[in-house]
Length: 362
Image (cartoon, rainbow, N blue to C red; front, side, top):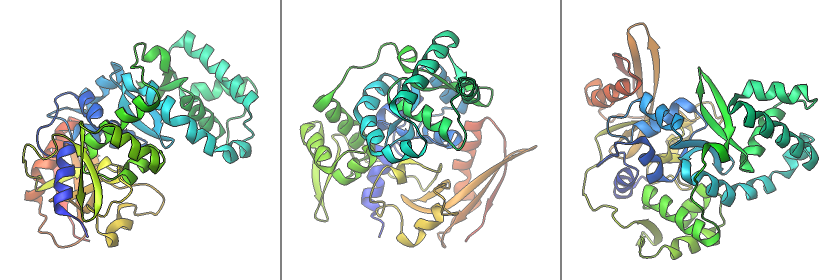
């Protein structure tokens, strides 16, 4: 069953409740990384944790090279602090690529082919600075390297895992790619145990209280590595036993005593759910499948009531502005009036008027 005490503390550590940073980059730095495979959801994940930041502010932080989108954790696209992207990729990506040999064989991507793609794309980006995915696919095709059946996307993913490229700012509605070394010319230099310790501090400060298994899953580390990294951060992190299980959190966790908001509207793929291996503290098992309504790995935006994930919501933009429909999973007294503040905040984030709020119980 959900644990209100743990949920409340996670809301504060993730800055869903309590004091919020003014700067979108500070949100990302606080959490260490935020899952970002859906661009619109990722920008709201940052905005929901910021004090008054708009979509334009978040996109400006990306364009200004303060936030980088790259495949840092588990081979999944994340938003990370720009200065930390190189060491995070260097620490975590090689193990992901090593585990994916079968897929590389299926796509007929041997070391020679990958090296050729690397040379082509590096040369093109040094000249043009940024290119869209379509432009990079055309570049590879013209060189006789086929990109169909997800092969081209996988090539870009592998080159991001080597630290060659990362995503750049939008060009119109198209995502661009840039050379990571040029985009982040002054990275932090961390390696080995120092990098693991820093990653543990970021994770548990921005996600705690959480377990070593949660951290292991989030970062793609072994449990042994996760425990050692947390232990190495003793004095910065604190460990406590809750229900017979060891949990780590940042040193200031719970210090402000702020209560969780009555209602929160979080995006799909949000760290509040996906940042943990064990999600039972915030979500009832019988509702878990409702967060992924098609069973296809696409996570719906989430309604949070007093720290518990208690429904989903969706938006549509019309001529009159943005319309939101909220679907609670069960009777929780959720009304349009109770979600009004959060829906207004979301509309302000998008820079659109709020046209309608509709609450429909499942």
